[in-house]
Amino acid sequence: MRSSHYLASALLLVAGAALAWPTTPTVAAAQTGGGNVEHGRYLVQDVAMCQQCHSPRDDQGNLLESNLFEGGPIPVRPPWPNDWALIAPRNKGLPGYDDAAAMRLLTEGSIGRDGKQLRPPMPHFHMTKQDAADVIAYMRSLR
Image (cartoon, rainbow, N blue to C red; front, top):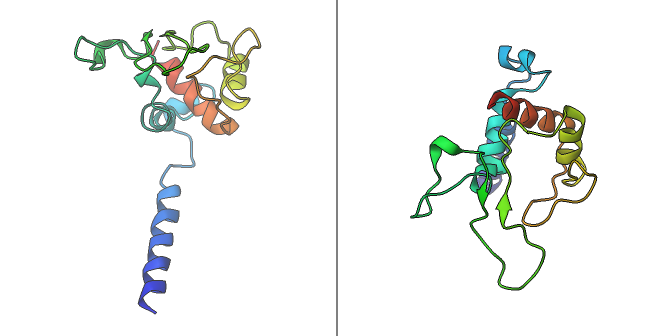
């Protein structure tokens, strides 16, 4: 009986956490074409962790905070030869991507501007359109 009570409490806690993001657009969201900038920041920095590959590092391997999303060498390499990218491009402001191409990149499996699949280690994103709009709004706010 107690374990089912704890399970029900845990499920309510998880459900409440999922609803933590506001459903009404913020002022920043209204200014960036419908995307929620703060939710986009969360997705970029805390979920996808884009800065880990798209930012340069110092000699000790620490991210250069003043240069986040400016591009840099990919910090990991696979132990076997393959087509792994060695440099991550600047993605601050999403240069070279209009909103439609950025949406395709984030919702259709990381398809680049040229219509081709981006090379590993770039994840194959399949975000919802709203999450992608939020990411685009955040990345555009960094210009």
